[in-house]
Amino acid sequence: DIVMTQSPDSLAVSLGERATINCKSSQSVLYSSNNKNYLAWYQQKPGQPPKLLIYWASTRESGVPDRFRGSGSGTDFTLTISSLQAEDVAVYYCQQYYSKPRTFGHGTKLEIK
Amino acid sequence: EVQLLESGGGLVQPGGSLRLSCAASEFTFSSYAMSWVRQAPGKGLEWVSSISGSDDITYYADSVKGRFTISRDNSKNTLYLQMNSLRAEDTAVYYCAKDLWLRGVTPFDYWGQGTLVTVSS
Image (cartoon, rainbow over all chains, first blue to last red; front, side):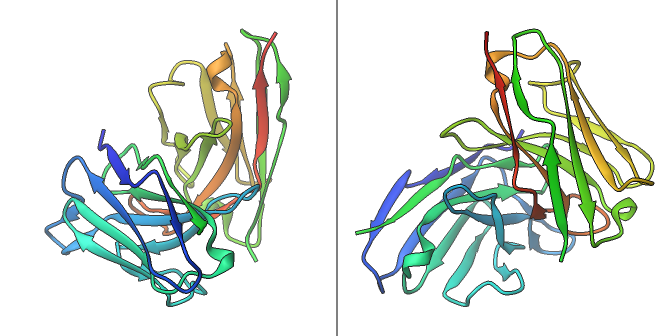
């Protein structure tokens, strides 16, 4: 199974500042035949189910604000929130869908400083 | 708007059984693979099981293989998870989730609100 490792475990950022969350996979999730990274990001707010934010490592799901940006390739990925808003407080998970089973990172808790 | 509504959770003793249901609406249910994903209290997300859209191909996490059975009734737009030989470590909120695309290995684009399963004596 592909192991997904996120860092940091938790993060406190001031409103309006940038937040950066990292995700590393134990093997590449870049599929050479289509040059796509099979990596997604989810946001889970307290008491709610996860919400898909980004897939193909950098494609925002419909309705996701453009302050959320995904980047990276191969084994190293980053989720950046360019200007933190109060409603962004949540736990963020990365997930690979390169191979089964689809595995998640352990999550990064984002709070307001 | 796609809706997924889980039911069937509750308190069960170790070794007991429970059947979860997930009622789906507002999409062509039979066209999409569906999955169960669980989250233990205060913990992260763990994929549990998946089933293909119409040919009933199933997949299981090693942690539940041989104890859990996923199934679906496309005529009722409903997904099921039969859980037998339950253990304390199966305690979690169980979410049903829909595949984003019709084919291949995909992210999950819609999730239900979850149903809590507590295994305790």
